[in-house]
Length: 427
Image (cartoon, rainbow, N blue to C red; front, side):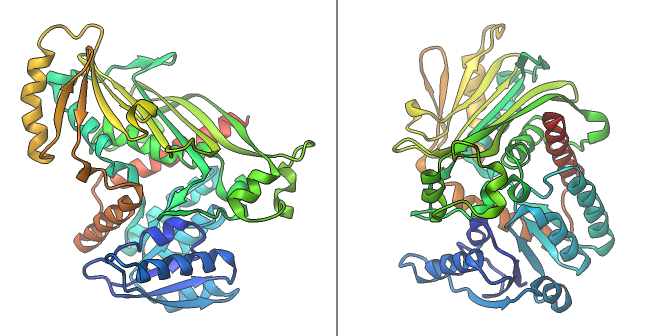
């Protein structure tokens, strides 16, 4: 098979190509307009090809010009289209790719508003008729502490049953902190200016929250088909802006000033307000969840993007922390629930052997009233490696000719949740 990259405006497009894949041709066609986004992508691919350790061998054939989309559709130069860039046209791009007969691996989010969600539904229906697969890049499903949180939640002797919770005390909480300025592949990332424009990137409620809503569904209702029309109910949602100074904007973008399309968001004091933050309180099948995302300019020294997650069960709570105490690496803790009763230690001892059959080397360390799940360093492959893992999984689905039956309805449930939450927050 052959990859085709469409308008790679986000560094995630390059991360899909950080490694080579069996049965994927070394030649990659790229359709894009001329400009800095394409230049950054090409430089990143060249750096992978030139690195000393395990270099890639991609041969990139650019098709550059204002008519790039029409040429992409007419020529159909590959089998799998990778779409990761400006989100304003994301749903249009993936719809056109599906109509042209490409399998599509799209970066999140695939929809950033209600109109985009409706178009996404039509794209999934067209993909079904065309016999092609449409899939989004859910990297966080491959993070080891999340995998272990999911596994332990299926062991009734340890976790018990997932609680229903309440709005003020949800059964599931997921919080994510991200940073505009950070290292990618060892280099300080340069953000495109449009990344700060919610009309192009999408607000925080429909961007990073895509991962968190996905994990809520994937962990709490594994392999179950969800119907957004009957199973999901949003209770409330809110949004707020990150304030970015001109100096901070310059640090993140390498630009001296805000472009014209951002002037609408510039405040009287000269700072830029970007609605990158948000919170959703909602239920799935009666289970209360709270999802929140926050964006800062840069992380403290030694830190990076962080994740906090709680699943509350009748016997134990499964908690992922990634703070200073964990040296900013995710760690899973198992904490007895208030009414856990006796026998949790014995149940954990038996459960550990079950978990170790899938993840050899994982262990338990008793702390003050809780257990820390210890994980060998080899499992902490890092966020960038997860893009390759998602791509490998998608290529297996393509080879088999189908996604799991629950994936498409649950993607629709996910994007309905985020886009509906945005509409509620803005109202």
